[in-house]
Length: 169
Ligand SMILES: Cc1cc2nc3c(=O)[nH]c(=O)nc-3n(C[C@H](O)[C@H](O)[C@H](O)COP(=O)(O)OP(=O)(O)OC[C@H]3O[C@@H](n4cnc5c(N)ncnc54)[C@H](O)[C@@H]3O)c2cc1C
Image (cartoon, rainbow, N blue to C red):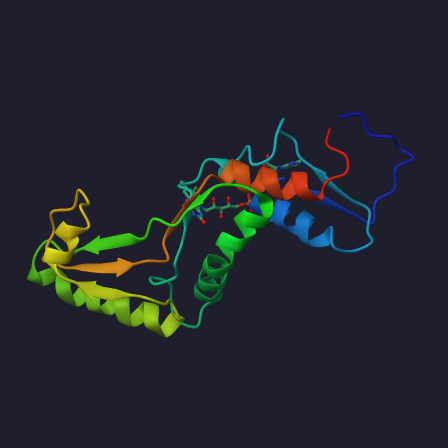
């Protein structure tokens, strides 16, 4: 990219990963001249574009931690964010499966932890229900986590930048 030295920016963000793109989008709501500099040829070329694409629900994060708070808040807002950015999002839900009774206590703990963090809809479901869901799981009892989602990181971060950029070079 040719940078015109006459260009003056109020804010320069270095790195167009998840964090840089989200900050740029937020700042686009204000009367500011913002530039995002990325050393690669596209957004999310690093970790952000190669992660597992999971929208974490927040049931296994330490209660009271910022990670727990942000997972729950981020998860709740993700669907509307994707709608706004016009990118696909699939709320798949998640099952944490116990293979035998010795795993029940661990599942109980996750449910308790998730409830402390404000995760909605956590449920202890039986083997019969798991089978009805027609998942490839063959475990015993499960913790069902309806909030779990899957996204396409490149679409989301690209969408964030494209929606707020006036110039894309
Ligand atoms: C294997 C793995 C799986 C993960 N799975 C998930 C998941 O499923 N769900 C989830 O929520 N999180 C997941 N994460 C975590 C998540 O991917 C990261 O927390 C997130 O991507 C970090 O974003 P970032 O913008 O801070 O950094 P990055 O994505 O690393 O972005 C930084 C950007 O800055 C650019 N840059 C660096 N130096 C310069 C420079 N000097 N000039 C210009 N540009 C520069 C880089 O090229 C890069 O594009 C996973 C992480 C890993 C490693």
